[in-house]
Length: 144
Image (cartoon, one colour):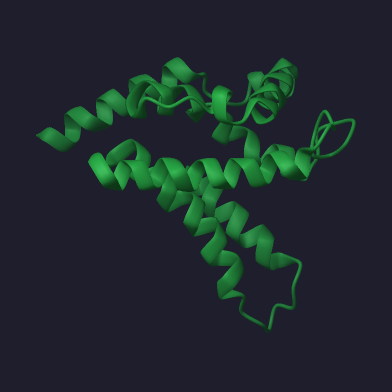
C-alpha cells in the first residue's frame, strides 16, 4: 500500500511544473493512506473516524466513475491501474473493521470486480486471502 501511495503522490504531482511543490495534492493521497491505516490498525473512535473518511473518499470516486465501466471509460486506464490494488483491501476491511464497502459503495465494488476479470490485473495483484495472511503475519510480528 505504501508503494501505491508513493506512486500516486508522485503521479499526482508529475503533471505540474517540476519547480513547484504541491503539498495539497500530496496531502490528499496521504489522507487516504492515513484513513486506511486507522481502519486496519485503529480501535474504537479512531477506527470509526477512519471508516467515515474512507467511505467519503470512495463515494467521491463513485461519483467520478459514474455509469462508466472503468475510470478509463471503456478500458482500463491510469486511474484504474492506480486504484485497483486498493480493491483487494475491501474484504479485509469488512473482516477487521466490520463495515462493507459493497453496502456503502456498490458501484466501486462492481468496478473492482470488473477490473479483476482482466487477466493482467488478476495475475499481477495478490488476492484477498494473501492480504489477510500477510496481515496476520504482521500482527504476530508486532506482538513479539
